Structure formats: C-alpha cells, structure tokens
Image (cartoon, rainbow, N blue to C red; front, side, top):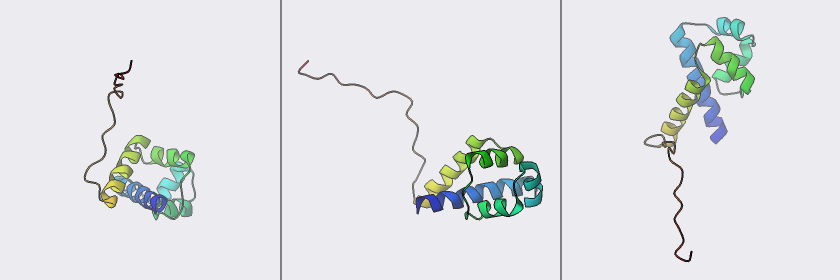
Length: 101
C-alpha cells in the first residue's frame, strides 16, 4: 500500500501544480520532453517517475523538487491519519555516561 499511496499522492501534487499554472498536459510534455501519455499515467498514480523524470517535471512546472516532496509527504501523512508531520531532529542524540565508568 505504501508505494501505491506515494505514487497517487505524487500524481495529485503534480496535477494540482500544473492546474494552478493553467498548463495542459501537452504543454508540460513539450517543456519536460516526456510523452503526454507517460505524464498522464504519472498524474493518475499508475507509473513511477524516475528521479530524472521528476526533475524534468519540476522544472517544467517551475517548482523545486523539495517542495513537491514536502507536499507529497504532507498528503501521505494526512492519508495515513497522522496529526502532524514528524519534526526533523535539530540536535544530535545525547550520550549518557555509564555509572560504571
């Protein structure tokens, strides 16, 4: 279920971004140099996007890859029922000295 959910959420995020920009699949296909059918399958969550393809799509949609991945992670968290994204650790783990030392 995990990868299918990720593919579906990635497609949703990419489609939403494309719609916000008012671009058609054909326009994105031309800029990204990826077949129209393949982009459509990615947006429907039926195909996985390689890292190179995802980078091309992000360039065509004028959105940083990091933003797409954040949006996908947030959507997956909501779908999984998580209340909030898990914060990144900002400080290294503390080491507790042993009493035997």
